[in-house]
Each structure stands twice: as C-alpha cells, then as structure tokens.
Image (tube, rainbow, N blue to C red; front, side, top):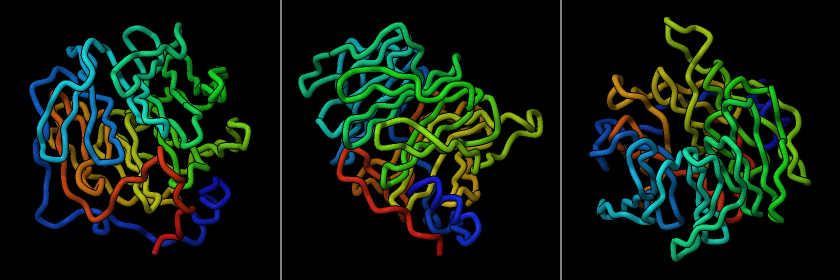
Length: 299
C-alpha cells in the first residue's frame, strides 16, 4: 500500500471495527512471565515467538507453538527490538550497547553498526533494515551492502515503533512524544518520501498531546496496531481508528506487539514483566517472505 493509496482510502474507505479482529469470549492469557521488562516481540515463519528482557535479561527467549519457553540466544543483554530477515537471520537493536547486530542460525553475532541509539527495527524482504533513533528524532536505513544513511530527521518527535504495510511499500512509525503514527512511502532506492500523520492516536486526559506510541505490528489486511498509554490501538489501512484494546494490566507499560502462534493468528503484547496473548480472527503480515498485495479498501 502506498501513501497515495492510503490518502485515497481516507475518502472512500469504510470502517474496520475491532469486531472484525477480536473473538467474543477470548481475552488475554499469560504466555510468559517472570521478567523485569519484556520487549522486542518478533516471530518466525512457523509462528514461534521471540523476545527480550531489555532491563533484566541476558538472552533472547523463545516461546514455541506448544507454549514452551527456552533461552534461544545466550549472552545477549539489553535488546529492545528484534526481527527475522528473509535471509534466515535474526536482527536486533542492542540499545544498551548502542549497536545494531544480526545473529545467524547458530547464534553467532555480527555487528552491523555501532555508536547509534537504536530503539526498534524492521527488515524488508529485499534486505533493507530501518531502525528508529528516539533521542535524535531519526529514522535510519542500513542497505543490503551495509551502508547506513539517515532517511528521516526531525519529522517524528520521538520515533519509536516501526512496521510495514503488507506490500512493503509504506513504512509506519509511532511517536512516543506526540499523538500521531507517521507513514512514509518507501522509494525504489530505499529512501523515504511523502511523510504523513494520518493516524491520530488517542491520548490520556493527563497528556492530551502525547499518546506514548511504542511498538507496532501489521496484519494481513493492512491494519496497524500500536501500543500506547491508552492501550493497544488499531487503525485500518486508511489510517482511521478502528478501536482500542485494553492492556492486560493497565498499571504496567504496554510496549511491544506481535502476531505469532499457530497461523500467526494470536496477538501478543509485552506488558511489564509478562507477555500476554489472545486469539484473533486475523493473522499477522510477514515481512521476510514475498510481499503481500496492497491492502484492499475497507469493507
């Protein structure tokens, strides 16, 4: 979905309410617990879940399709963002050490860049890695040849969560210091253009201009999900609000979201020291395979 299509959809699309996503009688259930600050939710092609304990853990953890948890990569502390690439490697933002790295199938680490302030990342099917730099108001790109460039600066107040449209033509970035999710068109050369703030997040009464937008995910129908101070907010492909899903534990921070599990049909969130999941009527868009078609207009 291009930004142009999204703008057209604003005029002609119809609502996509939460009733199209949530299953009546199916709420949140604990998938993993006992952590300090769970973050970095990611999935592989099979639907296994991967995550980190960004403040207290020392490993990348895995929850398989049977719900069994294990340490997947040892000696990997301070990771704030994870995503599998189409090359079968796991990419990571090591916020604690100010690096972006990649792990091969044996868990061996390769450093891609250092002296950066990475928060979260996404990797396209053709190997372009985009990551957010919250303190410096930047979005950076690491090209397949390893060259790093700044593709946006100063547009998003505090760029945080990051995701793609199903066709991987649009990049979406949440603002932790504002009330919008920003979208950019990804050009053929990997640069970003036409920034737009078409998704307006709901904000707390105490901070009417700051939604605390954080982790993001996309489903196969082009709906965007973003964790915020008000809960998990959903937007349709046109950028219109579809509803807000309450956090499992509103007293803890809701920071990361991912579709994983069987058929990638479970919505997972990191909420404080626990990870919760709930079954949905949809499934997550996968970015390490062949891009999906542009999102159809809402029905």
